[in-house]
Length: 79
Picture 1: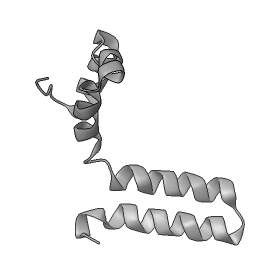
Picture 2 (picture 1 turned 90 degrees about the vertical axis):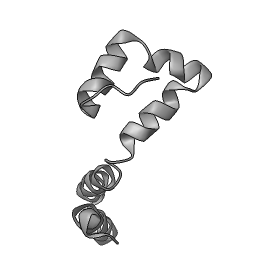
Picture 3 (picture 1 turned 120 degrees about the vertical axis):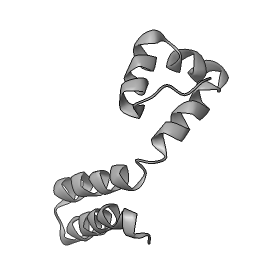
Picture 4 (picture 1 turned 45 degrees about the vertical axis):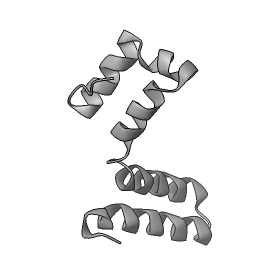
């Protein structure tokens, strides 16, 4: 449990508790937010990996998808 992941860990845990209490929609929304925060540093690495997979790579290298990834990533990673 790193200090930088504290917000995501707390969100995921609170979402799980809310889900157990009996509010599944709210719990899943909070868990999803925690998941995104926890793994936000991994998404650019995953995008580069997917670009190298044969069929998915072709889809992810299309100009429209690539521009979305570049905007999210903030910079273009050489392929």
